[in-house]
Length: 257
Ligand code: PEP
Image (cartoon, rainbow, N blue to C red; front, side, top):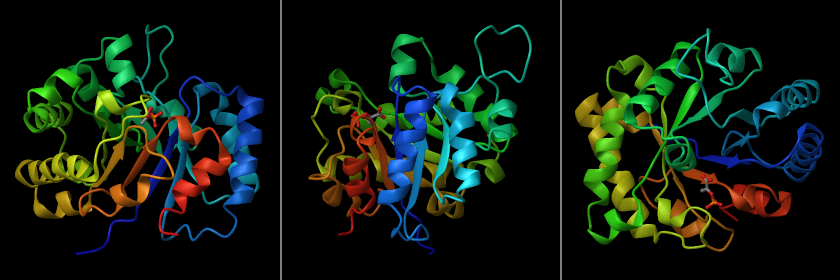
């Protein structure tokens, strides 16, 4: 089985205008100059308004980092005021787009059908969706995290063919761990990530399931990443808060050290 390349992705959320984004990427690039990007992929997910600046910097300086958007429209074009399409993101060189981040699900009422539309729109434009899912505290307390997240996976992938699903990235982000400082234990992360991988085998094939990178997200920090990355079915981290401080983010990229 080919080893999956770990992905450490920084979700900047609503932080950094385009000038601040340039400065942050430059600092990151400097601190990452000795990184073996074949061993670890590093991605940043700035606000839409910074994507063009990040593209210019990455292209101009031939940086090995990848980047993407925090959301994507289900629609390609038309009367959808305020939306940004996959085609627009592809033109900006985006590799990724988050789909269904818990903050979008909570504050923008994105349900599984909407997330499914976003996943399909991303694939249609050759953007790799980073499909975010995860249970809230009540579900966790009821011990229903596996059935809950597997149902979210099923909903998000309805009608997605195997050739597309093979490029998918999944991010398991328990809502109670996002931005709270309360990280899942490595065993809790592994339990759900393994269940999601098993479900991908059932939905598609062992090949798709083995190829899919499944990230953990939720209060990942320098002092907890190693235990999480040591789990068989965890292939990286989706990082919020700690991705805004170059030193902190670089220490996450160097999780092997
Ligand atoms: C996130 O926004 O995806 C996230 C995991 O945030 P944090 O690392 O701040 O918990």
